[in-house]
Figure (tube, helix red, strand yellow):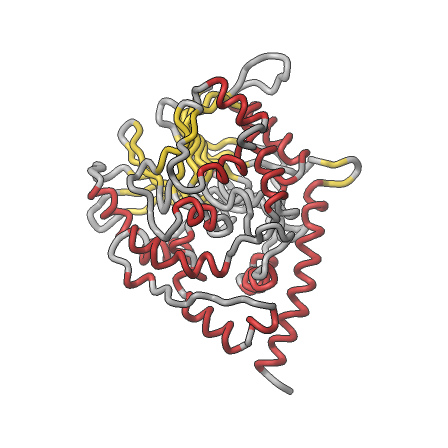
Length: 424
């Protein structure tokens, strides 16, 4: 089978709480990709064919993992994809946990010059003139000597582009817009409040060296390029590169924000098996697995207020036709889909790809992938890890262990901070 697009987000490779940081987790995804689309038989060459593989942010977790960890796990993830599918082009749209890869590549705050992004590999040959291209290629493909890169360079067929803040393209009669969700996440749109809380609680001293850049008023942005420039200093200060440390200086603060957002409290049962759902059938799917996104969802409210107007203007400025838009994002780890009508009467389909990170043993991640086949049919693939084991241990439990340790540590930190705020 041939797909026009396949999109995945929030793999957080390198993190011990990510299912895809485990070899068994990657092997399971390999099987799931082959079963509905191609063949799961190792002996034949029934690979899935993908024209464009969209990596939708927080792919390597550069904030909470060391450089060696993200290189190891991202290389292994890319090798798995190459074994499961023949991919003509990869598009990487950075998120917040890997945003510093974008700013390092570009050398300054700014957006890609065009909706298709910056092509940094063309027919297996790297563009060595644009920023730190080799750093990106090392993390994703093991450049210059890794097996993935050697194959890419020898075959001379693969293209790889980096796009930010969106990747936009047309197929059939629809416009597809992909972004991570960094620019309209609640922490970013309320960055000045976060800065005030951090200053009030003296978190820079409590957690050791956090210095949050607070001049991040997204309401000042007049377009997507200005929005990217405005959010970059704040995002890179709250989610900095850990470099070669196992965790960054913002690790504890990030888990404090995660705890306050309620992610640790979610309880979503594991589906019995992995399934693929065409768009036409999504309204019949149980919301415990694939949520129906509505205008009551916080991320949708933030998207409509802070991102959608800039996105529509961006599409107009770049001569995309009006109407028939499919918008795909990640960030929230919640997954889901929805349909929204604009004041003009145009309809937008919206998909969230979920994530692959465990927050507690009772909550199975929304491991969703967005796909479009060559006929223009859209799908969400829901991946279940219910029966995946490492030896005698369920993989879900192994991945949850580190999350639960951090939850306990964060709980102690929160109690300490509350004593500072509410003495006696």
